[in-house]
Length: 287
Ligand code: GLU
Image 1: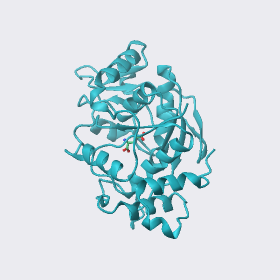
Image 2 (image 1 turned 90 degrees about the vertical axis):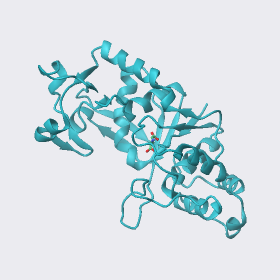
Image 3 (image 1 turned 180 degrees about the horizontal axis):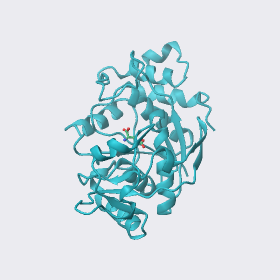
Image 4 (image 1 turned 120 degrees about the horizontal axis):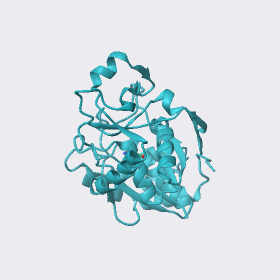
């Protein structure tokens, strides 16, 4: 049984870049006669924009991306994250850290995604400090997986990322923990998402192994870039989708994914266009 998902963060309305992620995961699920869930990743309430979650769901509906079951909200799942974290702490696999960002920045090595924490609090928080963040203890063994599109990926998490944060000093659970707990809870078998998250995946595999969860199959698709060559993102104010006229942007998303649209595409409605896409060979040819 295939179970896929689209997991937007409600930090703004959907734009063409996130539409590509939604369409890619939706079509992959439907090609496999699978379920397609939507999970609202609203665990970081500080970055949430009021109304964005509803706007995203409205846009998905207008674009013909009908999800299965009910939407899972991460803000309703805090007990599950706390339980997973407590389990890791009890087993000595996670520890409290009292180092400030400034202390870390002064001495730590820079990794591809931020500073690599040197593990100072691994054996206890320094006297006079409060351990407010919780980090996972990483190991030197490399993490391997085969991405359905990108091929073999290897990362030594301890060396390239370091002991990463599971609960932030402000008390919020980190994306890495929430995503792993929820992918397991929802029985996700296939994750299809943008290439910007490829570098996170080994951390997620590492946590899955510690928590005894199954590892889904991953596919990281190319990203839509803006004119400046950077990923389109809500933070960089990518224009929101046009809900009055969804077809041109849906065609754009399908075209980006490699579909060669017929001339009549412009006259179709979103569900027919998606149904047409499913009759075509998968341009990602990912299996
Ligand atoms: N919520 C994340 C985002 O919007 C995606 C998480 C995921 O697909 O694993 O970037």
